[in-house]
Image: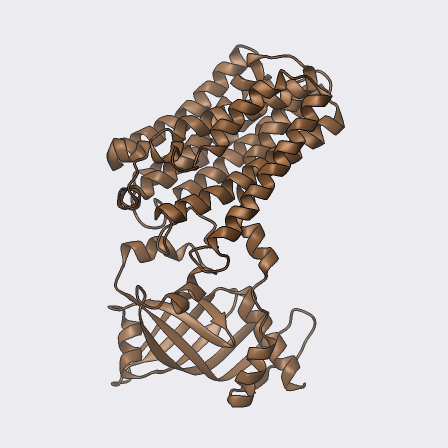
Length: 449
């Protein structure tokens, strides 16, 4: 096998994995292994280790290490030996720190809790690559020298600008917006597919655009730094300039407005009332100098915004204003507030440093924990009430299957460790998406029956 083909397979395995097992040996011969997140660039492997850990102390005594990169199955993996260079404290070396974090954002809560960490760089000396994913290929070796690293620099994929633009909009969070449009549409007696598609595209565009705007203004206001979560990280990780993120957001918002105008002409100018209120809630959510999220009105703004998406979707289909679609989405809207509150509860101190207060900041950590529990529990209570009053069909009670996940989230809200507490907004988003899917299934079953 030619060297380039070997390196291509090496790069492929490096890029598709994100954890490494490092085995170190101290001067007196004691062996210690640790597992950590890593990032890669030009064939080098970057890792962040706790300064007081045994692995880091062993590396200071003996920089020669052994490592394994794999997915816990003996199909496609790298074994290797290398030499470690200690770059320095994680706070001081932005470029090297970013290589690790942009691939592994869940490491940030750990770094917030354990500040005394350093970035290390592993320079491989020899690796053994095993790849049985596409048939049996004998394990092959790669010796690393100047020629090898030169080829790796040429072959390593450069960061994709398009991928960064997409990342800036945080498309992984649009599930709730899609659900709001679908639920509002399913509640109407008849469905116009063209209007539904335009509504869906417009709602997605405005959501993605506001996400990008939020990133821009949070960065400008000092709320987004390398050690904070909640943003797309394209600015703090240096993937895009702030003005590029602002341009992406503005373009999407303008496109959403054009779709809103088209829908208004297709339906009625009464739609403008809903669109204007939605625009105010969305555009001024983070827009400086107002910024609802900066003056403790973020919870109210997101609650109203998503329920209005459901109402607007219903109106576009029926040309009728009704409390039904607004009320029907409240169980999910409460969880949307829970997502925001989980984020704000984790970032109370960061928000204070940035000079603004959220509702979580007013309540404090203890009050925020009980408020989060209230939001989650209320979501299910409201759902049952809506079914009892026949606003939602009885089929939607299948969404009660998500209660175990809801109880787990509440439990984690009262356990402020860096994993469960730090990722509470992510887990709440998963819960809200699951609840939305079950409600949609219930509505579809009701139409079929």
